Structure formats: C-alpha cells, structure tokens
Image 1 (cartoon, rainbow, N blue to C red):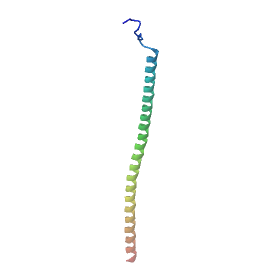
Image 2 (tube, one colour; image 1 turned 90 degrees about the horizontal axis):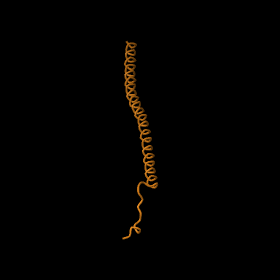
Image 3 (cartoon, one colour; image 1 turned 30 degrees about the vertical axis):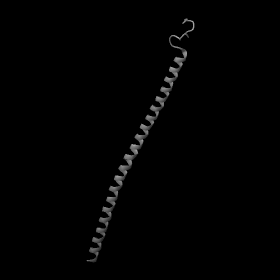
Length: 90
C-alpha cells in the first residue's frame, strides 16, 4: 500500500473543535445562569409568601381571641343588666 493513498489526519486541535467546545461551554453557562436566577427568585418569593402566611395565622388567632373577649363582654353586660333590673324591682 503506497503511503500517498492514505488520507492525512489532522494533528492537534482544530479551529472547529475549539469553536464547538466554546459554544458548548457558553450554552452550559447560560443555562446555569438562568437556573440560578430562577432559583433565587423562587426563594425570595417563597420568603414573602411564608411571611404573609405567618401574618394570616397570627391574625386568625387574634380574631379568635377578640371574639372570645367580645363574647365575655356581652355576657358581662347581660349579667350586669339583669342585676340592675333586679335591684330596681326590689
């Protein structure tokens, strides 16, 4: 086999290989940047949501306490009214 028939293989790194590697690295960098940005946005939004949920639960507890206080005052007012009514009748 004559050596002139063999195709000569390129030695070393070609420009095409370098450009493919750079493109791949750029795509990976862009995708990881987008993922990091979205993860950060989700984290900060979840912090806001958790704060609002805590405030809502605190307000619900306060509402229950206020309702109990109102009921106690209504009962006290009714009892006081009946005492005054009984004293006036005597």
